Image (cartoon, rainbow, N blue to C red):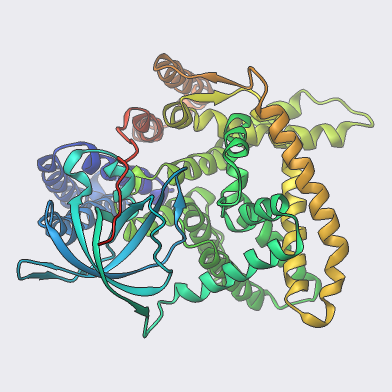
Amino acid sequence: MVRVLFYASIISLLISAAFLFLPLTFMYFLLGFLTLAFIFSVVFKKKFNTHNLPVLLLICTFICSWILFNFNINVKKLNEFDGKTVLAEGYVSEDPTPHGVYSSYILNIKNISTDGVNYKPILSSKLKIYEDTGFTLNNYRYVKAVFDVSSVKSDEMGYSSDYSENIFLRGNVKRIYSEKEMERKPFDYYFYCIKQKIKILMYNNLNNESAALCNAVLLGDKSGLDDFFIDNTKTAGVSHMLVVSGLHLSIIAQIFSLFFKKIKVPYKLNAVLMLFVTFTVMGVCGFSSCILRAGFTYIIYYVGKLIFKRGDPLNSLGASALIIMLFNPYLFGNIGFLLSYTSTFAIIFLSPKVYGLFKKLYFRGFLYKIYLGIAFLLSQTLSAIFVTLPITCFYFGYFSVIAPVTNILLSHAITLLLFLIILTVLLLLIPIINYAALPFLFFITLICNYVYYVINTLGSLKYAALPAKNEYYIVWLLTVILLFIIFYVKKFYDFSIVRIISKITSALIVVTSVFLIAFANVKDIDKIHIYTV
Protein backbone atom coordinates (compact mmCIF):
# COMPACT_ATOMS: atom_id res chain seq x y z
CA MET A 1 0.00 0.00 0.00
CA VAL A 2 2.60 2.51 -1.18
CA ARG A 3 0.11 5.16 -2.32
CA VAL A 4 -1.25 5.61 1.17
CA LEU A 5 -2.32 9.24 0.66
CA PHE A 6 -4.25 8.37 -2.49
CA TYR A 7 -6.13 5.51 -0.82
CA ALA A 8 -6.71 7.69 2.26
CA SER A 9 -8.25 10.44 0.10
CA ILE A 10 -10.72 8.00 -1.48
CA ILE A 11 -11.79 6.57 1.87
CA SER A 12 -12.02 10.09 3.33
CA LEU A 13 -14.32 11.16 0.48
CA LEU A 14 -16.50 8.15 1.24
CA ILE A 15 -16.57 9.19 4.90
CA SER A 16 -17.67 12.64 3.73
CA ALA A 17 -20.42 10.98 1.66
CA ALA A 18 -21.51 8.96 4.69
CA PHE A 19 -22.04 12.15 6.70
CA LEU A 20 -24.07 13.77 3.91
CA PHE A 21 -26.35 10.84 3.15
CA LEU A 22 -26.42 8.56 6.19
CA PRO A 23 -27.67 9.05 9.80
CA LEU A 24 -25.37 10.85 12.21
CA THR A 25 -25.26 7.82 14.51
CA PHE A 26 -23.53 5.92 11.71
CA MET A 27 -20.73 8.50 11.77
CA TYR A 28 -20.09 7.94 15.47
CA PHE A 29 -20.08 4.19 14.89
CA LEU A 30 -17.67 4.67 11.98
CA LEU A 31 -15.36 6.82 14.12
CA GLY A 32 -15.29 4.13 16.81
CA PHE A 33 -14.58 1.43 14.23
CA LEU A 34 -11.72 3.42 12.64
CA THR A 35 -10.23 4.13 16.06
CA LEU A 36 -10.26 0.46 17.03
CA ALA A 37 -8.89 -0.53 13.61
CA PHE A 38 -6.05 1.94 14.02
CA ILE A 39 -5.16 0.60 17.48
CA PHE A 40 -5.31 -2.98 16.17
CA SER A 41 -3.06 -2.14 13.19
CA VAL A 42 -0.46 -0.54 15.47
CA VAL A 43 -0.42 -3.45 17.91
CA PHE A 44 -0.19 -6.14 15.21
CA LYS A 45 1.82 -4.15 12.67
CA LYS A 46 4.84 -6.46 12.73
CA LYS A 47 2.83 -9.66 12.78
CA PHE A 48 0.87 -8.87 9.61
CA ASN A 49 3.62 -6.76 7.98
CA THR A 50 1.25 -3.84 7.28
CA HIS A 51 3.52 -0.85 7.88
CA ASN A 52 1.45 1.66 5.88
CA LEU A 53 -1.94 0.55 7.22
CA PRO A 54 -1.65 2.47 10.55
CA VAL A 55 -0.89 5.67 8.60
CA LEU A 56 -3.90 5.10 6.35
CA LEU A 57 -6.22 4.44 9.30
CA LEU A 58 -4.83 7.40 11.26
CA ILE A 59 -5.58 9.79 8.39
CA CYS A 60 -9.10 8.40 7.94
CA THR A 61 -9.77 8.56 11.69
CA PHE A 62 -8.62 12.18 11.75
CA ILE A 63 -10.87 13.13 8.81
CA CYS A 64 -13.87 11.44 10.43
CA SER A 65 -13.12 13.26 13.71
CA TRP A 66 -12.71 16.55 11.85
CA ILE A 67 -16.09 16.15 10.11
CA LEU A 68 -17.86 15.46 13.41
CA PHE A 69 -15.98 18.26 15.20
CA ASN A 70 -16.96 20.77 12.51
CA PHE A 71 -20.58 19.63 12.72
CA ASN A 72 -20.80 19.90 16.51
CA ILE A 73 -18.86 23.14 16.89
CA ASN A 74 -20.19 24.94 13.83
CA VAL A 75 -23.11 23.44 11.92
CA LYS A 76 -25.09 22.32 14.97
CA LYS A 77 -24.74 25.75 16.58
CA LEU A 78 -25.91 27.52 13.43
CA ASN A 79 -28.84 25.10 13.04
CA GLU A 80 -30.17 26.48 16.33
CA PHE A 81 -31.08 29.66 14.42
CA ASP A 82 -33.35 27.70 12.06
CA GLY A 83 -36.65 29.53 11.46
CA LYS A 84 -35.64 32.62 13.45
CA THR A 85 -35.03 36.28 12.66
CA VAL A 86 -31.36 37.05 13.27
CA LEU A 87 -28.94 39.94 13.16
CA ALA A 88 -25.98 38.83 11.03
CA GLU A 89 -22.70 40.57 10.24
CA GLY A 90 -20.21 39.68 7.55
CA TYR A 91 -18.98 40.48 4.05
CA VAL A 92 -19.53 39.31 0.48
CA SER A 93 -16.35 38.06 -1.14
CA GLU A 94 -17.66 36.69 -4.45
CA ASP A 95 -19.44 38.17 -7.44
CA PRO A 96 -23.17 37.37 -7.59
CA THR A 97 -23.92 34.11 -9.39
CA PRO A 98 -26.60 34.62 -12.07
CA HIS A 99 -29.46 32.11 -12.24
CA GLY A 100 -31.52 33.59 -15.06
CA VAL A 101 -33.97 36.05 -13.51
CA TYR A 102 -32.30 36.04 -10.09
CA SER A 103 -28.82 35.99 -8.56
CA SER A 104 -27.26 34.53 -5.45
CA TYR A 105 -24.82 36.00 -2.95
CA ILE A 106 -22.59 34.36 -0.39
CA LEU A 107 -22.19 36.22 2.89
CA ASN A 108 -19.18 35.27 5.04
CA ILE A 109 -20.59 35.24 8.56
CA LYS A 110 -18.55 36.96 11.25
CA ASN A 111 -21.23 37.22 13.91
CA ILE A 112 -24.86 36.14 14.28
CA SER A 113 -27.30 36.72 17.15
CA THR A 114 -30.96 36.44 18.13
CA ASP A 115 -33.01 36.41 21.35
CA GLY A 116 -29.92 37.22 23.38
CA VAL A 117 -27.98 34.33 21.87
CA ASN A 118 -24.75 35.44 20.19
CA TYR A 119 -22.48 33.18 18.14
CA LYS A 120 -19.21 33.81 16.32
CA PRO A 121 -18.39 30.90 14.02
CA ILE A 122 -15.08 29.34 15.00
CA LEU A 123 -14.62 27.96 11.50
CA SER A 124 -15.57 29.42 8.12
CA SER A 125 -19.35 29.68 7.76
CA LYS A 126 -21.47 31.27 5.05
CA LEU A 127 -25.02 32.41 4.42
CA LYS A 128 -26.52 31.91 0.96
CA ILE A 129 -28.73 34.77 -0.22
CA TYR A 130 -30.93 34.90 -3.32
CA GLU A 131 -32.41 38.03 -4.88
CA ASP A 132 -34.49 39.08 -7.89
CA THR A 133 -35.43 42.64 -6.98
CA GLY A 134 -32.27 44.47 -8.08
CA PHE A 135 -30.99 44.61 -4.51
CA THR A 136 -27.17 44.49 -4.45
CA LEU A 137 -24.44 43.92 -1.91
CA ASN A 138 -20.99 45.28 -2.67
CA ASN A 139 -18.01 42.97 -2.45
CA TYR A 140 -15.69 43.29 0.53
CA ARG A 141 -17.90 45.78 2.35
CA TYR A 142 -18.93 44.93 5.89
CA VAL A 143 -22.70 44.36 6.08
CA LYS A 144 -24.94 44.33 9.15
CA ALA A 145 -28.50 43.20 8.39
CA VAL A 146 -31.56 41.42 9.76
CA PHE A 147 -32.36 38.09 8.11
CA ASP A 148 -35.10 35.49 8.30
CA VAL A 149 -33.01 32.33 8.13
CA SER A 150 -33.36 28.58 7.89
CA SER A 151 -30.73 25.88 8.05
CA VAL A 152 -29.71 24.52 4.67
CA LYS A 153 -30.40 20.95 5.75
CA SER A 154 -33.82 21.69 7.23
CA ASP A 155 -35.70 20.76 4.07
CA GLU A 156 -33.13 18.34 2.62
CA MET A 157 -32.90 20.40 -0.58
CA GLY A 158 -29.41 20.68 -2.01
CA TYR A 159 -27.66 20.73 1.34
CA SER A 160 -24.80 18.49 0.24
CA SER A 161 -23.51 20.86 -2.43
CA ASP A 162 -23.82 23.81 -0.03
CA TYR A 163 -22.15 22.00 2.86
CA SER A 164 -19.13 21.41 0.64
CA GLU A 165 -18.69 25.20 0.45
CA ASN A 166 -19.21 25.77 4.19
CA ILE A 167 -22.70 27.16 3.56
CA PHE A 168 -25.00 26.18 6.43
CA LEU A 169 -27.69 28.91 6.44
CA ARG A 170 -29.91 30.66 3.91
CA GLY A 171 -32.39 33.47 4.29
CA ASN A 172 -34.24 36.64 3.33
CA VAL A 173 -33.06 40.17 4.12
CA LYS A 174 -35.56 42.19 6.17
CA ARG A 175 -33.51 45.28 6.96
CA ILE A 176 -29.97 46.51 6.35
CA TYR A 177 -28.51 48.44 9.26
CA SER A 178 -25.16 49.36 7.74
CA GLU A 179 -22.83 48.69 4.86
CA LYS A 180 -19.34 50.14 5.17
CA GLU A 181 -15.76 49.64 4.07
CA MET A 182 -13.95 46.86 5.89
CA GLU A 183 -11.29 48.19 8.22
CA ARG A 184 -9.08 45.18 7.61
CA LYS A 185 -9.38 43.46 4.25
CA PRO A 186 -8.96 39.63 4.10
CA PHE A 187 -5.97 38.36 2.16
CA ASP A 188 -8.12 37.15 -0.77
CA TYR A 189 -9.30 40.75 -1.38
CA TYR A 190 -6.08 41.61 -3.19
CA PHE A 191 -6.43 38.60 -5.49
CA TYR A 192 -9.98 39.74 -6.21
CA CYS A 193 -8.63 43.16 -7.25
CA ILE A 194 -6.19 41.50 -9.66
CA LYS A 195 -9.04 39.44 -11.11
CA GLN A 196 -11.19 42.55 -11.62
CA LYS A 197 -8.27 44.36 -13.26
CA ILE A 198 -7.78 41.52 -15.76
CA LYS A 199 -11.52 41.41 -16.55
CA ILE A 200 -11.55 45.15 -17.26
CA LEU A 201 -8.47 44.83 -19.49
CA MET A 202 -10.16 42.12 -21.54
CA TYR A 203 -13.39 44.07 -22.02
CA ASN A 204 -11.54 47.30 -22.84
CA ASN A 205 -9.41 45.70 -25.55
CA LEU A 206 -11.65 42.97 -27.05
CA ASN A 207 -15.22 42.67 -28.22
CA ASN A 208 -17.68 41.42 -25.58
CA GLU A 209 -17.85 37.81 -26.84
CA SER A 210 -14.06 37.39 -27.02
CA ALA A 211 -13.55 39.10 -23.65
CA ALA A 212 -16.17 36.87 -22.00
CA LEU A 213 -14.51 33.73 -23.38
CA CYS A 214 -11.04 34.91 -22.32
CA ASN A 215 -12.25 35.60 -18.78
CA ALA A 216 -13.80 32.13 -18.64
CA VAL A 217 -10.62 30.41 -19.88
CA LEU A 218 -8.18 32.40 -17.72
CA LEU A 219 -10.24 33.16 -14.62
CA GLY A 220 -13.08 30.63 -14.71
CA ASP A 221 -15.53 33.56 -14.76
CA LYS A 222 -18.45 32.53 -17.01
CA SER A 223 -20.73 35.44 -16.11
CA GLY A 224 -20.28 37.03 -19.55
CA LEU A 225 -21.19 33.91 -21.53
CA ASP A 226 -24.75 33.41 -22.74
CA ASP A 227 -26.81 30.35 -21.75
CA PHE A 228 -26.92 29.01 -25.33
CA PHE A 229 -23.13 28.78 -25.51
CA ILE A 230 -22.81 27.28 -22.01
CA ASP A 231 -25.38 24.60 -22.86
CA ASN A 232 -23.45 23.79 -26.04
CA THR A 233 -20.19 23.40 -24.10
CA LYS A 234 -21.88 20.78 -21.91
CA THR A 235 -23.38 18.97 -24.89
CA ALA A 236 -20.04 19.08 -26.72
CA GLY A 237 -18.24 17.72 -23.64
CA VAL A 238 -15.81 20.64 -23.25
CA SER A 239 -17.26 22.47 -20.23
CA HIS A 240 -14.02 21.62 -18.35
CA MET A 241 -12.19 24.01 -20.68
CA LEU A 242 -14.19 26.92 -19.24
CA VAL A 243 -13.53 25.97 -15.61
CA VAL A 244 -10.07 26.78 -14.31
CA SER A 245 -8.69 23.43 -13.18
CA GLY A 246 -5.68 21.17 -13.62
CA LEU A 247 -5.69 21.59 -17.41
CA HIS A 248 -5.36 25.37 -17.22
CA LEU A 249 -2.94 25.36 -14.30
CA SER A 250 -0.68 22.84 -16.07
CA ILE A 251 -0.56 25.08 -19.16
CA ILE A 252 0.21 28.16 -17.07
CA ALA A 253 2.86 26.23 -15.10
CA GLN A 254 4.53 25.01 -18.29
CA ILE A 255 4.59 28.54 -19.74
CA PHE A 256 6.25 30.08 -16.69
CA SER A 257 8.54 27.09 -16.12
CA LEU A 258 9.79 27.30 -19.70
CA PHE A 259 10.33 31.06 -19.31
CA PHE A 260 12.33 30.60 -16.09
CA LYS A 261 14.47 27.94 -17.76
CA LYS A 262 15.14 30.17 -20.76
CA ILE A 263 16.46 32.97 -18.53
CA LYS A 264 18.48 30.33 -16.61
CA VAL A 265 16.89 30.68 -13.19
CA PRO A 266 18.63 28.38 -10.63
CA TYR A 267 16.91 25.06 -9.88
CA LYS A 268 15.71 25.82 -6.35
CA LEU A 269 14.75 29.41 -7.15
CA ASN A 270 12.74 28.05 -10.09
CA ALA A 271 10.75 25.85 -7.69
CA VAL A 272 10.16 28.78 -5.32
CA LEU A 273 8.97 31.03 -8.16
CA MET A 274 6.65 28.29 -9.43
CA LEU A 275 5.17 27.98 -5.95
CA PHE A 276 4.47 31.71 -6.05
CA VAL A 277 2.92 31.46 -9.54
CA THR A 278 0.74 28.53 -8.48
CA PHE A 279 -0.53 30.28 -5.35
CA THR A 280 -1.24 33.48 -7.31
CA VAL A 281 -3.29 31.59 -9.90
CA MET A 282 -5.24 29.88 -7.09
CA GLY A 283 -5.97 33.24 -5.48
CA VAL A 284 -6.99 35.04 -8.67
CA CYS A 285 -9.36 32.16 -9.47
CA GLY A 286 -11.02 32.56 -6.08
CA PHE A 287 -9.62 29.43 -4.37
CA SER A 288 -12.41 27.31 -5.84
CA SER A 289 -12.38 23.56 -5.11
CA CYS A 290 -11.29 22.69 -8.65
CA ILE A 291 -8.31 25.04 -8.67
CA LEU A 292 -7.40 24.10 -5.09
CA ARG A 293 -7.15 20.42 -6.03
CA ALA A 294 -4.84 21.22 -8.94
CA GLY A 295 -2.99 23.92 -7.02
CA PHE A 296 -2.15 21.78 -4.00
CA THR A 297 -1.02 19.00 -6.33
CA TYR A 298 1.48 21.37 -7.94
CA ILE A 299 2.52 22.81 -4.59
CA ILE A 300 3.32 19.32 -3.33
CA TYR A 301 5.24 18.63 -6.54
CA TYR A 302 7.40 21.79 -6.28
CA VAL A 303 7.99 21.33 -2.56
CA GLY A 304 9.19 17.84 -3.48
CA LYS A 305 11.63 19.37 -5.95
CA LEU A 306 12.96 21.63 -3.22
CA ILE A 307 13.81 18.67 -0.97
CA PHE A 308 15.07 16.54 -3.88
CA LYS A 309 12.35 13.93 -3.73
CA ARG A 310 10.18 12.66 -6.55
CA GLY A 311 6.51 12.36 -5.70
CA ASP A 312 4.00 9.87 -6.96
CA PRO A 313 1.27 11.63 -9.03
CA LEU A 314 -1.58 9.67 -7.43
CA ASN A 315 -0.18 10.33 -3.96
CA SER A 316 0.03 14.04 -4.81
CA LEU A 317 -3.59 13.94 -6.00
CA GLY A 318 -4.64 12.26 -2.75
CA ALA A 319 -2.64 14.69 -0.63
CA SER A 320 -4.26 17.69 -2.34
CA ALA A 321 -7.74 16.24 -1.71
CA LEU A 322 -6.94 15.66 1.98
CA ILE A 323 -5.67 19.24 2.36
CA ILE A 324 -8.84 20.64 0.76
CA MET A 325 -10.91 18.56 3.19
CA LEU A 326 -9.40 20.57 6.02
CA PHE A 327 -11.21 23.60 4.56
CA ASN A 328 -14.30 21.79 3.18
CA PRO A 329 -14.76 18.58 5.18
CA TYR A 330 -17.98 17.73 3.30
CA LEU A 331 -16.21 17.71 -0.06
CA PHE A 332 -18.13 14.78 -1.51
CA GLY A 333 -21.07 17.08 -2.20
CA ASN A 334 -19.02 19.28 -4.54
CA ILE A 335 -19.75 18.08 -8.08
CA GLY A 336 -17.02 20.25 -9.62
CA PHE A 337 -14.39 18.77 -7.34
CA LEU A 338 -15.53 15.19 -8.01
CA LEU A 339 -15.33 15.73 -11.77
CA SER A 340 -11.89 17.30 -11.39
CA TYR A 341 -10.61 14.58 -9.04
CA THR A 342 -11.89 11.63 -11.08
CA SER A 343 -10.79 13.05 -14.44
CA THR A 344 -7.30 13.71 -13.05
CA PHE A 345 -7.18 10.14 -11.75
CA ALA A 346 -8.20 8.94 -15.23
CA ILE A 347 -5.46 10.96 -16.93
CA ILE A 348 -2.79 9.78 -14.49
CA PHE A 349 -3.77 6.13 -14.16
CA LEU A 350 -5.88 5.08 -17.15
CA SER A 351 -4.73 7.38 -19.95
CA PRO A 352 -1.18 5.91 -20.31
CA LYS A 353 -2.66 2.43 -20.69
CA VAL A 354 -5.12 3.59 -23.37
CA TYR A 355 -2.31 5.47 -25.13
CA GLY A 356 -0.23 2.27 -25.07
CA LEU A 357 -3.04 0.46 -26.89
CA PHE A 358 -3.15 3.18 -29.54
CA LYS A 359 0.62 2.93 -30.02
CA LYS A 360 0.31 -0.76 -30.73
CA LEU A 361 -1.96 0.13 -33.65
CA TYR A 362 0.64 2.49 -35.09
CA PHE A 363 1.80 2.77 -38.64
CA ARG A 364 5.20 4.07 -39.68
CA GLY A 365 5.28 6.86 -42.18
CA PHE A 366 4.87 10.56 -42.81
CA LEU A 367 1.81 10.95 -40.56
CA TYR A 368 3.17 8.93 -37.62
CA LYS A 369 3.89 11.90 -35.33
CA ILE A 370 0.52 13.45 -36.13
CA TYR A 371 -1.13 10.12 -35.34
CA LEU A 372 0.65 9.94 -31.96
CA GLY A 373 -0.45 13.48 -31.09
CA ILE A 374 -4.08 12.69 -31.87
CA ALA A 375 -3.80 9.35 -30.04
CA PHE A 376 -2.42 11.12 -26.95
CA LEU A 377 -5.30 13.63 -26.86
CA LEU A 378 -7.85 10.92 -27.60
CA SER A 379 -6.54 8.63 -24.85
CA GLN A 380 -6.85 11.43 -22.26
CA THR A 381 -10.33 12.39 -23.45
CA LEU A 382 -11.69 8.84 -23.57
CA SER A 383 -10.21 8.02 -20.15
CA ALA A 384 -11.68 11.13 -18.52
CA ILE A 385 -15.09 10.57 -20.16
CA PHE A 386 -15.22 6.95 -19.05
CA VAL A 387 -14.27 7.55 -15.42
CA THR A 388 -16.54 10.59 -14.99
CA LEU A 389 -19.46 8.97 -16.83
CA PRO A 390 -21.63 8.20 -13.74
CA ILE A 391 -21.25 11.77 -12.47
CA THR A 392 -22.05 13.47 -15.77
CA CYS A 393 -24.97 11.12 -16.46
CA PHE A 394 -26.58 11.80 -13.11
CA TYR A 395 -25.83 15.51 -12.81
CA PHE A 396 -26.50 16.56 -16.43
CA GLY A 397 -28.87 13.74 -17.43
CA TYR A 398 -26.93 12.89 -20.60
CA PHE A 399 -23.46 12.08 -21.87
CA SER A 400 -21.68 13.64 -24.81
CA VAL A 401 -21.07 11.50 -27.88
CA ILE A 402 -19.22 14.25 -29.75
CA ALA A 403 -16.79 15.00 -26.86
CA PRO A 404 -13.74 13.14 -28.30
CA VAL A 405 -13.98 15.14 -31.54
CA THR A 406 -14.47 18.53 -29.88
CA ASN A 407 -11.63 17.90 -27.43
CA ILE A 408 -9.23 17.08 -30.26
CA LEU A 409 -10.34 20.16 -32.24
CA LEU A 410 -10.09 22.55 -29.28
CA SER A 411 -7.29 21.21 -27.07
CA HIS A 412 -4.41 22.97 -28.86
CA ALA A 413 -6.57 26.03 -29.56
CA ILE A 414 -7.35 26.52 -25.85
CA THR A 415 -3.68 26.00 -24.96
CA LEU A 416 -2.60 28.65 -27.48
CA LEU A 417 -5.41 30.97 -26.39
CA LEU A 418 -4.40 30.72 -22.74
CA PHE A 419 -0.76 31.43 -23.63
CA LEU A 420 -1.71 34.49 -25.69
CA ILE A 421 -4.03 35.81 -22.97
CA ILE A 422 -1.30 35.61 -20.32
CA LEU A 423 1.22 37.29 -22.62
CA THR A 424 -1.29 39.99 -23.61
CA VAL A 425 -2.26 40.75 -20.01
CA LEU A 426 1.39 41.16 -19.02
CA LEU A 427 1.97 43.53 -21.95
CA LEU A 428 -1.16 45.57 -21.26
CA LEU A 429 -0.12 46.07 -17.64
CA ILE A 430 3.08 47.85 -18.76
CA PRO A 431 2.09 51.31 -20.11
CA ILE A 432 5.25 51.89 -22.16
CA ILE A 433 4.96 48.72 -24.28
CA ASN A 434 1.22 48.01 -24.16
CA TYR A 435 0.95 48.75 -27.88
CA ALA A 436 2.92 45.54 -28.47
CA ALA A 437 -0.19 43.60 -27.39
CA LEU A 438 -2.17 44.67 -30.51
CA PRO A 439 -1.11 41.77 -32.76
CA PHE A 440 -1.79 39.27 -29.97
CA LEU A 441 -5.26 40.74 -29.46
CA PHE A 442 -5.95 40.10 -33.15
CA PHE A 443 -4.96 36.43 -32.87
CA ILE A 444 -6.93 36.07 -29.62
CA THR A 445 -10.06 37.28 -31.45
CA LEU A 446 -9.48 34.78 -34.27
CA ILE A 447 -9.06 31.87 -31.84
CA CYS A 448 -12.13 32.92 -29.85
CA ASN A 449 -14.19 32.98 -33.05
CA TYR A 450 -12.90 29.49 -33.89
CA VAL A 451 -13.79 28.18 -30.40
CA TYR A 452 -17.28 29.68 -30.60
CA TYR A 453 -17.81 28.20 -34.06
CA VAL A 454 -16.69 24.67 -33.11
CA ILE A 455 -18.68 24.53 -29.87
CA ASN A 456 -21.86 26.06 -31.25
CA THR A 457 -21.72 23.95 -34.42
CA LEU A 458 -20.96 20.57 -32.86
CA GLY A 459 -22.82 21.21 -29.61
CA SER A 460 -26.05 21.94 -31.44
CA LEU A 461 -26.00 18.75 -33.53
CA LYS A 462 -29.08 16.59 -33.03
CA TYR A 463 -27.26 13.53 -31.65
CA ALA A 464 -24.29 15.29 -30.04
CA ALA A 465 -25.46 13.96 -26.66
CA LEU A 466 -27.63 11.04 -25.61
CA PRO A 467 -29.92 10.93 -22.58
CA ALA A 468 -28.67 8.86 -19.63
CA LYS A 469 -30.71 6.29 -17.78
CA ASN A 470 -30.06 4.52 -14.48
CA GLU A 471 -29.26 1.26 -16.28
CA TYR A 472 -26.11 2.87 -17.69
CA TYR A 473 -24.55 2.99 -14.22
CA ILE A 474 -24.81 -0.79 -13.86
CA VAL A 475 -23.27 -1.29 -17.31
CA TRP A 476 -20.47 1.10 -16.39
CA LEU A 477 -19.78 -0.64 -13.07
CA LEU A 478 -19.66 -4.10 -14.67
CA THR A 479 -17.33 -2.78 -17.38
CA VAL A 480 -14.92 -1.38 -14.78
CA ILE A 481 -14.83 -4.67 -12.89
CA LEU A 482 -14.28 -6.61 -16.13
CA LEU A 483 -11.43 -4.32 -17.22
CA PHE A 484 -9.84 -4.61 -13.79
CA ILE A 485 -9.90 -8.42 -13.97
CA ILE A 486 -8.46 -8.43 -17.50
CA PHE A 487 -5.69 -6.01 -16.57
CA TYR A 488 -4.55 -7.81 -13.43
CA VAL A 489 -5.21 -11.44 -14.29
CA LYS A 490 -1.70 -11.82 -15.76
CA LYS A 491 -0.10 -10.50 -12.59
CA PHE A 492 -1.99 -12.47 -9.94
CA TYR A 493 0.48 -15.36 -9.83
CA ASP A 494 3.21 -12.98 -8.61
CA PHE A 495 1.10 -11.54 -5.80
CA SER A 496 0.76 -12.64 -2.23
CA ILE A 497 -2.75 -13.00 -0.81
CA VAL A 498 -2.40 -9.71 1.07
CA ARG A 499 -1.39 -7.81 -2.07
CA ILE A 500 -4.21 -9.35 -4.11
CA ILE A 501 -6.76 -8.37 -1.46
CA SER A 502 -5.34 -4.84 -1.20
CA LYS A 503 -5.45 -4.40 -4.99
CA ILE A 504 -9.03 -5.63 -5.25
CA THR A 505 -10.13 -3.55 -2.27
CA SER A 506 -8.50 -0.37 -3.58
CA ALA A 507 -10.06 -0.87 -7.01
CA LEU A 508 -13.51 -1.41 -5.51
CA ILE A 509 -13.08 1.71 -3.38
CA VAL A 510 -12.19 3.74 -6.47
CA VAL A 511 -15.22 2.36 -8.31
CA THR A 512 -17.55 2.87 -5.36
CA SER A 513 -16.41 6.46 -4.72
CA VAL A 514 -17.37 7.41 -8.26
CA PHE A 515 -20.40 5.12 -8.37
CA LEU A 516 -22.07 6.42 -5.21
CA ILE A 517 -22.34 9.98 -6.49
CA ALA A 518 -24.64 8.69 -9.24
CA PHE A 519 -27.28 8.03 -6.59
CA ALA A 520 -26.47 11.00 -4.34
CA ASN A 521 -29.42 13.30 -3.73
CA VAL A 522 -27.82 16.53 -4.96
CA LYS A 523 -30.50 19.01 -6.02
CA ASP A 524 -30.80 22.74 -6.50
CA ILE A 525 -32.08 24.81 -3.60
CA ASP A 526 -35.49 26.47 -3.88
CA LYS A 527 -35.43 30.05 -5.03
CA ILE A 528 -35.31 32.55 -2.13
CA HIS A 529 -36.48 36.15 -2.40
CA ILE A 530 -34.76 39.11 -0.83
CA TYR A 531 -36.79 42.16 0.06
CA THR A 532 -35.89 45.34 1.86
CA VAL A 533 -38.06 47.38 4.18
